[in-house]
Length: 279
Image (cartoon, rainbow, N blue to C red):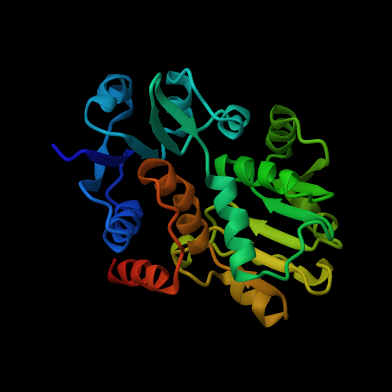
């Protein structure tokens, strides 16, 4: 048996690019006796699989729809996972698996990588959506010093619940119909919804209320340039695509499992872009 086996748990999970990313790093950094595999797990089978996962694997990534369910099945979590009630990775400890969450880290690291001049403490940030990604990103924004976090959702009650459950101190909920007010003076706009994925149902808000020099980010990365990012670029705003969030969230995972901190390079980015293009 391979000594250092890691997998990604999800249902379905064949679409995951995590094996491509981590196996690229395993080869690049010469990690001996290591592999990264896909492990499809139906929700009904999750508890049984998790109970025996440590017999074969030293760690795992966790993707939809299991992030919250795996959190609930664990007794050890890092502080971020504890706050979010969701995990995206597991690392083996002497006491069993610990659940962690690196999604928010991945977002901030990608933003700094692609737009290093984007100052998070310079003004408000507007988050579109109130799902799992929005939760992770909102917490990361607060920890990064964003002074005013605005959460907008078609159900403003859900945005309000998100703020309350995460105990966000500098956040306010908005209804979708209040988009112009929510955008006013924002230095950062982030789409955490699936709108624009596959080139369908593109977002097209009036961006004129954004502050000069604002940055627009979209966590959707298929297509890599969504309608929102094209609109923002045409209006002269800085843009950040979503692929880097996927790449950067993997960095602390790989380091925890294999003891090597990998780099997110253009070589890796192009490798994943080629895989996306190949379908």
